Image (tube, rainbow, N blue to C red):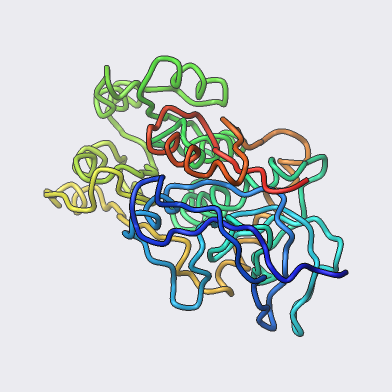
Length: 332
């Protein structure tokens, strides 16, 4: 396949607001031996992109400086040691960076085929959320079918993914959201909704569980939620932190951690090794991709913007009025 020498992409010459992003031109990415080159058709917009744009979340030293952590598109070139795919294959990929562009290089182990019946937009809406939820909720927290889980930020992409995957295996799911409309929406996906602006989630969990608490909490708020989360956990409960929208620091009384034998853990996805990400991809292909193919679990897309409208996509993300994923259409 004859490829162009340059591509359209979004750059951030200086950190700042959404207006700091520019539609620009750059050379196609060079391939490492274990990578594949993808012609991007769609890309997901995520909160780490916003943090990177602001200068608060720098990419790893060996990653593309461009924004973008997930894409879907067509394989157009293989690195010398890349395996599992061939030119023409339709893949979705967890990127280390560089997704806001017409082409991106990604380690082959971080790529998966489109689920059966999917198009580029739906396929691109999968990697960041599904890798994150699987690694934290099912790998690290070991959520079991007979257990209960509280998901904070239930109307976000991560929240809706966690709700669906937990409900699909038979777990009892509670989730917080900030409006009646968002609460009504997430209840359609199997969660008991808690409007955190009108209700104390700790009190609701205590009432719903006869004061026992939930087995697992997946939190992206941090800060003021930390102590309340610990109180809301059942004996041997697990708190898993995946973000800190209200700060990473909190004052804690650790007595409940000791008396209830709790586990507090968490992770970020981007710094993980290619080997770790490939292992997560393998688990997703085996255990989650069949659920996507049958429609038992599905990504929720709020709005789609053109690549050149990336600033508008970021404004929507920062406004937090969306439900589910915000996507960029890059090419047909």
